[in-house]
Length: 112
Image (cartoon, rainbow, N blue to C red; front, top):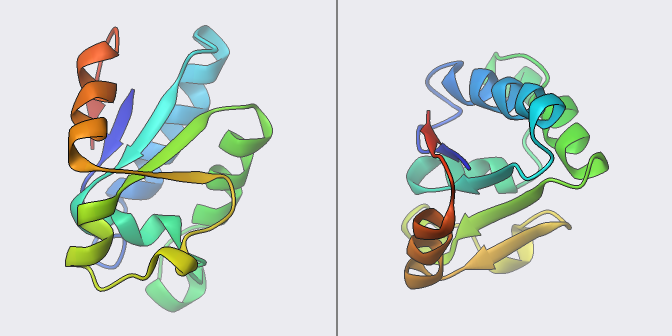
């Protein structure tokens, strides 16, 4: 499980985390991505050029193409003022309790 927590508006950490998740799929097909806190913005249609970072959509879409489960925490969406209808297709919205269960069930967790 790769967990992203930082704002994509302030650093390149999320882009790096997404690249790591793509790379992990080469070693383990059971990779999942969970967006928490300000990283919930990655579940929306961001414009990489507008935030001055690389092509986040490319990595995000690649994860979907190879079958990686992608989740965003409902409470993180609410805290960031993001409506559920703004979440991109293919991203499952989970409650905080469900997110905790995902983390507890993971063999390993990498946090960015």
